[in-house]
Image (cartoon, rainbow, N blue to C red; front, side, top):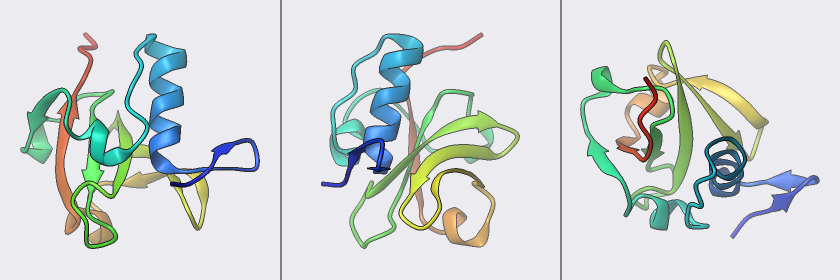
Length: 107
């Protein structure tokens, strides 16, 4: 388990804090547990703002999670870069994409 404080935050703590503070929704602590909830979205072209995106970055399903913010971009906490924004279409993330979960509906 990674960090969840001001000196460092891991990906699932980031999504958990954002969902709690912005939407009032309590998510499970780990990306694996977060992947178990919500409506599965497998088509990258049908993503909506607020969808949780899951990636296999360590050889384990759903080992990384971020929040889709639109225009092919997602916010996430990276070990290397801290909280950052990346493109889902980048070679690295595109080939590791495991699907998304829709927890909320934003109009």
